[in-house]
Image 1 (cartoon, one colour):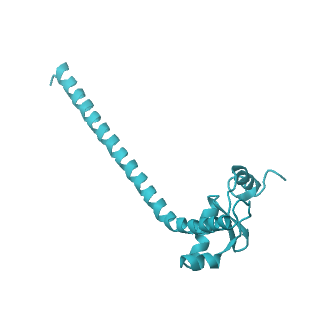
Image 2 (image 1 turned 120 degrees about the vertical axis):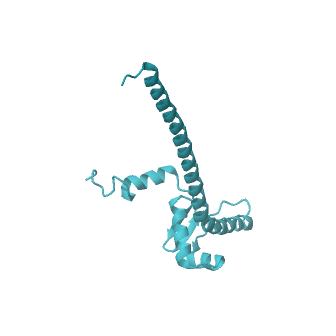
Image 3 (image 1 turned 45 degrees about the horizontal axis):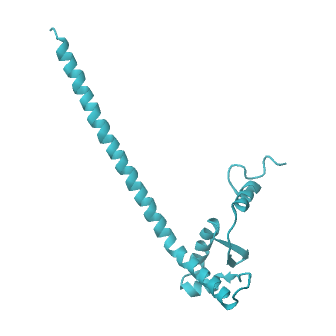
Length: 146
């Protein structure tokens, strides 16, 4: 059976149309999936941070009250104990401890003594120094500085 050049081109053109339609559909689907994943990540972050925000608000309020009691003075903030924070929030000490650890990892609070926490901002230098000293990661264990 003989085929003409026009019949061959119709097949190629229909193949290109099929590829174009599926390429566009795949791009739209991928965009929708990425958008959905972004929404899920935001939702999970909100869910995780809603309890931590209440804890941080308690500590901020303690800081505000201390500054109002001593206006114009540069005072060192007193540390708060886990039991006091748990009673204030009506949560278990275990849950409060987990939230405190998350806030410490983000650099918003510091553990001053065992079980006592204070507002404080770690600088980027402090965070990097801790990482390089073996706080975790690829270079943990002091392999190179022996």
